[in-house]
Amino acid sequence: MDTHVVGPLIARDTTTAKALVASLADRTDRPLRTDIDVRHEELLAWVRERGLSSVATNAVMTYGTTELPGDWQRRFAPLTVAAG
Image (tube, rainbow, N blue to C red; front, side):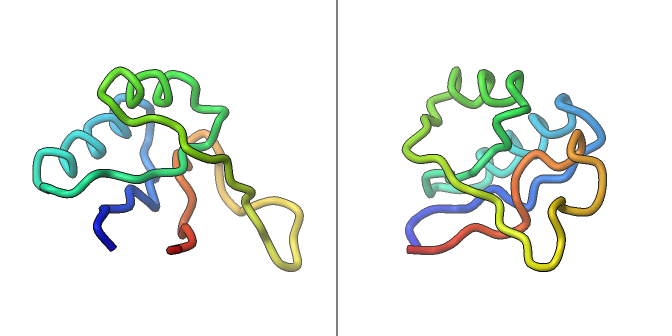
C-alpha cells in the first residue's frame, strides 16, 4: 500500500489520540488513512484541520456479539481496516 493506516488507535483520551496520530505523521512520507469512530467528533475535526478528509464511511462488523469489547470512548479507530 502507498498509505499508512492509523489503527488500531486506542488511547486514554482525545489529547493522547492526537499525539499518537501526530507522531506517526511526523515519521512517515506516506499519506495517512484512518477510519475514526464518528462519535469522536473532536478528533475528527482535528484531523480535518490537518488535511485528512473523509472519503468513505465504514461499518464495524463483529461475529457472535453485538458490541466490540471494551470502552468505546478509548477506541478511536478500529482494530483493522480492509485493504483494497
